[in-house]
Amino acid sequence: MASTLTDRAERLAELAYDGRLAEASLELGRFVDPNLDSSAALSRLDAMAARVEGDTHLALRRVIAIEDGIGGNVDDYHDPSNSFLHRVLDTRRGIPITLSVLWIEVGRRAGIEMVGVGLPGHFVVYAGGQMVDPFHYGEAIGFDEAAGLVAAALGGSPRLDRSWLSPVDTTGIMQRMLRNLEHVYRGDPRNTEWVEACIEILG
Image (cartoon, rainbow, N blue to C red; front, side, top):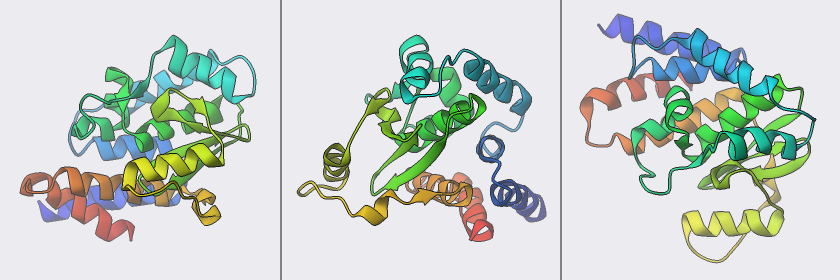
């Protein structure tokens, strides 16, 4: 069993190192839903992207947030389902980083330049050069709003270090998703085992 777990964790790492964000996120989902149909989930991302008309954050927001109503789960933020892309596609609710993954993957498929931004406590994206908060239904934000998001997540006064705006690659995104899950699954040995195995192999 340990060998199988290692193999699955190595597959996740391989996809992350290759920059295949959607596939890596769905591979993460296989640890909780072994029969997950990744092809179907990828097709849903493709279909969403096909409905995007334009190359701005507003075009992307119109499809993801307005038409499909996908945004933050404010009622049950720590529900593990919020951390898995395939479940977010079903429930239309998630946490900032998983929603950001969805935005990045739909945006890239639609030909929009997308960058993940790992603010402390709250992940956001640049979509077509505009900083956007997928958790709050794709609202456009500036530096002041970003500083406020950090304060809301961590407490204290609004603050923003420009280094926090550096792009986060696929491996960095997966590492952060796993750290979130490590926190969510604290006290749950069955799930912490695979999460820790992935963290170790991903580095």
